[in-house]
Image 1: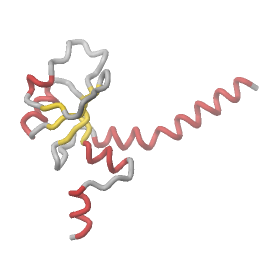
Image 2: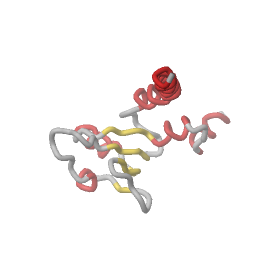
Image 3: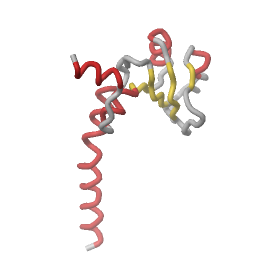
Image 4: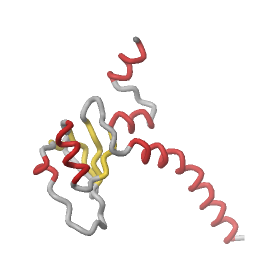
Length: 111
């Protein structure tokens, strides 16, 4: 009985998380129109990640996570982050996943 409940909960978790994870994996590395990104540093990478301030990005917000930071990066800094091995998620894609329309998306809907 306990084994079947465990496997049903695993199946539910897999079904619940497959869509958002596939969406985020599809959006990783794309350029955001507002130049806002969620930067994830791989915690178990072979080399130590560089300080993102050295790459020409500016951290946004008073707090950051253990492996993530919200940053503002121009296109050259975006390329530098990718070359340094960071996972970059556009903030507009994360907002769309949550059902939030950014001002740029609202303008695109009007035209």
